[in-house]
Image (cartoon, rainbow over all chains, first blue to last red; front, top):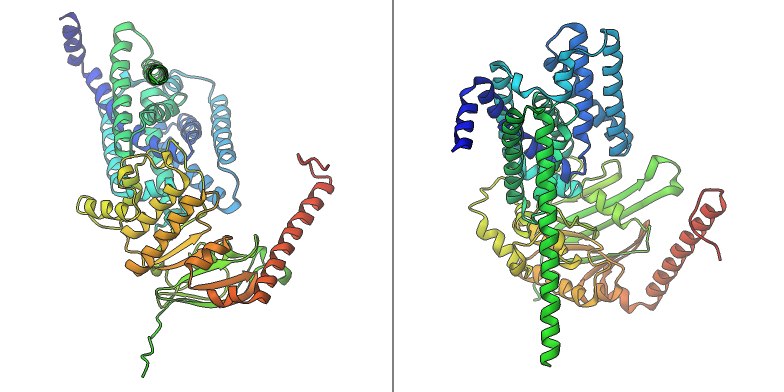
Length: 291
Length: 271
């Protein structure tokens, strides 16, 4: 009853409603984009894009433009540029990530130095400030999530095909190069919409952890995606509520909960395997004795 | 009077040459290759390692465009239009599929469907899986299957798209003999029942002899093209082929030695 009352009380606040709606939207888009990033062995792309976003935010703070808009522009341009560079020079994907990551971070550090050091604004972008989300932020997050989901739904077969085997996808008539550009733009947009939730430094965890947890269930694509979305939404909702009740940083709390779910699933999976192995051993012993 | 059956050319390869890096003519991966594949053929492509079999396939599949000569598939030059490629089922050399890749056999087969309603195609997916005799494994993840089973899934994916031409690049490498035989029976069944034309590269001469009616032997240049029994009946052709294999081995061995002696860091120990 106390818990019910507490939840009811939390939902009364406008900032909590906005936090939960935005958080759920971000959790869904991160799961969808993240699953493809993990399957394409580009898990660290989320990290690289978020560091570029950091550079973009610094440009915004330096030029007095709303940082999210500059982050959008810089991230999309940088991700398209690095995809083109990777294509034309055939540099390995992980090296491209390293270039993107360090270039973004370096730009951010230099511009922050020029604009007089760390500010409260910058802190909120680095570590997230979901409880400070205003109506406009919420609207932007919900609309962009909707756009990302519609595009991904319509293109899902092609994206799965590319993740499975890029060469076979090309032979089947899929324009892999164009779709790679589209995907990286969608990934950039997802990262920027998530900045408010968990901050630049923790975004990649929201992209990767629910997906690798879901993949451990050993299911097909649709079920894996649904499990991943469930874990991400659960982590975000529980994280926001706990952080409010216990006065913790929401971004960090959300990530800690998703890591907790990951560890719980690993533990249960391995325990079940040990129990299954033990039962199998006993069954073999019994059949040997009976013989 | 004996009726002459008209042969429909499915693939026409005319004077195709390709060299990596466009340097000297000595580095040609393919040099003036020409042959036709008729509807209903099973043609085996043989040749030593490095003979250009995979390069030829890459040209035929539109993965490489900067070759010289012309490749026509289903009557269309693929340099002008890539549309005919959509009627091809391509089974690449066997590779390790990530065990954790979250896609079931059904989901992988459904990737072959293009622009059709997934729900309506459910029965078609199952029937394609039945053709390759994997219906019991339809809900298993593809990464959990054996190498031979994975290749059969890829064939089912091609069948769902009504592929009338299958291109298989050494599909049974590192697969046990029993699985290989099952695979060859499947190829024959597809060819006879489903009228699928098959182009298939392999080092397994015995299997080629049993399954293919036509044979093309390449070693960068065209070495032989004709009926399979003609090749295997000629001791001279077989001897020439064995010699080319030996030469390829020697060439590879010499190159490896050069690399080892060239002050490059190497993990190979010369005994």
